[in-house]
Amino acid sequence: MPRDIYKDNPINLNLWSTMWSTHENTLAFIKDKNIKDAKGNADLQTVLPGGAAHELTFGEPGNKTIVGIRTWIPFISSEGEAMNVVKAQSGNFDADLNAARGVSDTIWKEVNETMKGYGIVQTALKDFSNNADSVIKGDKLHNQKEINWLANTEKSASGETFGGRLNQDSKYYLKHDTGTGKDENGYNAKGSDRANMDVLSGDGNTKIQLQVAYTISADTDGVVTLKQQVLTNNTGRAVSNKEWKIQKNQVANDLIKQDGNLKVLDDNTKLITNFCGTKNESGKGIFDGFLDRNQGGDHDYSQRKNGQPNDKYNEAYDGLGVVYTFTTTSVGFGGGAYSDRRTTITDPLMSAKADSKSDLYNFKNKPVRTSIYRTEEKPNAPAKVNTDGYLATVPNLSTLKGMQIKFNNPSKIAYSKLFYIPNATVSDLS
Image (cartoon, rainbow, N blue to C red; front, side, top):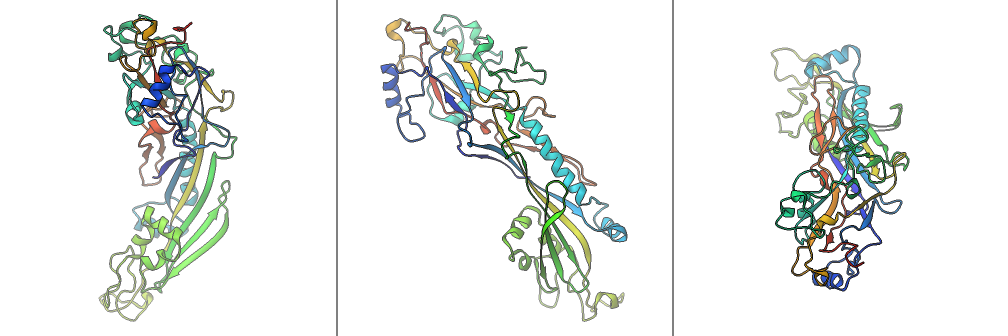
């Protein structure tokens, strides 16, 4: 089940501060490491000393981060006795179009809730790195666990270590709401230092973008008809209709090649291939499709007699379908009562200790921490499931069992550029 993140910019968390270091050693470090901004210029906003206040935003208005889900849900459009025949042939599957549309709607609504459970976390490495993927996998800060490279053998700039742990003061980290309005340490998670992303329902990008029903059928003359109905988002009423046909001696590809959308349909569902078959062997008819088509001699299906394999017939089948739905959920900061930015402070305990004032901003002989803000792997409440990459659960549909939809790499739903923490704090030069 395809799921994607659509971003105007790959690095979609903007890091802003008035406290970027402009120390001469910092400028030399930026030049030596060839650290560039998005325009290819030297990035002079990349070194944050300990104690520096900074903000995270999702960029200027119009810079979108959107979760897109594409679903292909099967249904049967037949009614009455025809439905009973189809139901028997399909292993008792009897979901109609409304039921299939309901599945897509349920998935989309859960995605909207789940995304509110994803939060932003800061991770870091002990030393310099220019590899964002490595830093994303680095140590999470402020999770009440010891960090090996902050052990007692390497004291912080302020001379404290907390046994390898960072400050637990709430001002030094973003609070991920656990579903109670508080984070795991009991701090309020509703202010501008809240870690959770918001669903932006008012920007026009959180909606059902497109819903299309495809129905395929065959008659006793061997003609296969595929109908397309573009549906309204609220009532499911068809607002446009289109259809394509193939004759009894044609195969799946003869139908698929009539329209690019049919290739997309078949690539994702194999509806056409499995229904029509792909082979048309001379004198033998078509054998590898769901239906018996163009079989035997010259008589039609109604005249076929048992025990006469040379009688020609075409198996009719009415109303097997798939409904395609494309939904989008816009995420960022600023949902409802929440701020459109998040604020926090670089923990001074991240800074390696300077031996003296002349040793401050020592990028050559002291560790330079590399850090990044990125998305947590797991969502908290209101997500139903707290596992890596969870997005939604496809509910059961008739005889079909549900399944989970997950992100392959949730850490990159939203992330910032790399930034560096020297062996200095904002108060060291006072």
